[in-house]
Image (cartoon, rainbow, N blue to C red; front, top):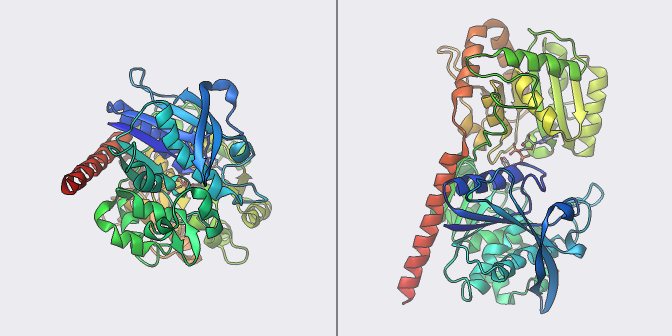
Length: 499
Ligand code: ADP
Ligand code: GLC
């Protein structure tokens, strides 16, 4: 199949979270299965043009009654199979993308012209296909920034040049929907009846993701449990009704992890590689991690690691909220060490600095570091992830692969990948709780720490169980090809019915 991925992020070019990992890893995996995959992303200011190849000629994109122009750059996605490389195209538009930030900056977290930026990007996807004379079988859009791709396909392109294609949209995070003033709608170049028919209407605002969910042939999210949760009022972020309405075309497909990059047996970013048969490297990683964080290098004190965006989704309020978060009492009451790497909301960054100065066994680094995140996964005994909601989550899978036991809230992808410790049988791969509040976190960390000191053989057995799990992408990529196949089947049926 010919598959076009439309996304606002893809590693190694632009990343704010797991979306970027997923888009590139899925693309590579599909290419390895023999499919022809091309990715389209914006050419942000941070992606240097020097390393890219320029595609001759400009791309004209019709927007709201006028044509706007962009350039196109291209590259081969690193890690591509030599015989079937994944090509990446970059939409280059100085006014929209020649600035710092993907969606915004700390001073302006959501750029005012985001609906225009990503409408332009989405429409450019089709113009690019015309330019390179390539007709994908599947337009696969990711999250709200690309949600207009299925809309343009359904209302403009399917009746035209792309009648043979179908569209899929993947929800990576329902917490972000792209909701803007409807004043922006005229710029999208769609008739006003589409505003209502495609479901843009949202309490007199314009909701891009909602329109994408109504328009795509198939919808998926990144874990089976999250697919169920999003159909409920509690986790549906007001789109549960749409997802229930479309439930026949909606499912969850668990993400995989890139096992070339996240693999303790070949990781170049940790002091010594290790595996099920020889765990000595894990102890070395722990010592190195303690050294880097200026903690005593005690091998037998449990070390709890955290790598996260500091945002409400990740349960940072319940963990670090001044005066009520549980991290303070966990570190005060328990004989443990805790290290964190993260960046995000200002209050939380401030609080972490403050906790680091007041607690001798808690240390935080504010920032983003790929190599330190590898060391934390390898060197920690436990990985804490008390997410309010988690569409999939990658870090708990990295943890399992590195023999680090996840302590997680049982939600979304966390519920699908971690098995709770059973004290009677010793089975399990982590420690789980249901309700998100400071005392559940406190109690569950306490339980894990108790097991570390009192059930050490079981802990070691659980580590090995986790390391044996197969989270490679191939299985998931095959599920995507089934989804694509169903889309094309559905389309063929529809055109038969029309005839
Ligand atoms: P989300 O996309 O919601 O943030 P995921 O668990 O799916 O959650 O993916 C997060 C990704 O971002 C992981 O690859 C994780 O290691 C990485 N990450 C998050 N914060 C940092 C950081 N401060 N430094 C390095 N990597 C980070
Ligand atoms: C989002 C979700 C995360 C998921 C990632 C990749 O960022 O928050 O749970 O793993 O997308 O699909």
